[in-house]
Image 1 (tube, rainbow, N blue to C red):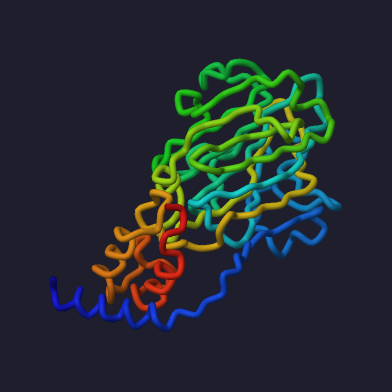
Image 2 (image 1 turned 60 degrees about the horizontal axis):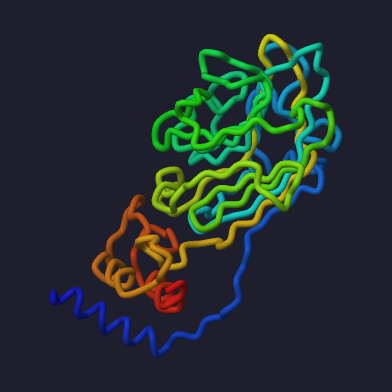
Length: 303
C-alpha cells in the first residue's frame, strides 16, 4: 500500500467516526405551471419566446425555429421524471416539422426544423409531423428517441433507439400531455395515457454518462420549428424532478456504493482539475474529504 493510500485510509477512519449527516433527500425539481414568469429562468434560442402564458418554440411562419432550456443543468445519471404538455396549431392543410424534448450537455441550438440536428452529446424525444424520406421517416405522425451519443445528433432514423407511430394525430390542435421517465436504464415515454408507456428505449447509466458532463449533469429543454409547411409549437406547462441532485458516490455507476467506489476516491484523493470525472463526487474541482464523506454516508446503498 502506498503512503498516500495509507494516509487516506486513516482519514476514512477519522471521517467515519465523525460522520453526522442528515438522511433527508433533496430534489432540485422545478415546475412551470405556465410560462408567464419563464423569461428569467429559461435560455432562449432563435424564435423561441413566451407568448402570454405559453412557451412558443416558433410562430406559424415558414422556416422559423427555436429552442428553450431550463437555465440550470440537472443531475440525470441516476434518473428523472418530467411532465409537460404540447399543442400544435395553425396548420394550413399540412404542417411541419414538429418538436422535441431534449437532453444536452450544452444548451445550444444549431439546425432548423425539429431543431436538435447536429447537437452533440444529446438525446431527443421527437414528435415529428412531417415525413422526410431522406431521414427514413415512416410517416408524418411518429415519435422517436434519437441519439448519436458524443457525435452530433441526427433526425435520421438510423440513429433512432425506438420509434412508434401513435394511433392519434400529434398535430390535432388538442393539448397532448407527455410524461418521460428515466429509471433503471430505461427511458419510458408516456403520451396522452400517462399510466402506460407508448415507447421505451434502453439507455444504460454508462451510456447516459456519454451525454452528461463529468459531474453527471446536462441541460433539459425543448426544440422545434416549421419547414415549408408552417405550424405553431407551444409548450403549455412543464415540471422536472431528478431522482437525485448530486452524485451519490456510486463512482462506477453499477447501482451499489461499495468498496470499489471508496477505493476509487481514495486513490484519486488530492487530485484537482476541471475534468476529474465521478471521483470528484461534489464536482468542486478537487477530490477531498467532502467526496469521501458522501461515499461513506451512502456506503451500501443500492447493494
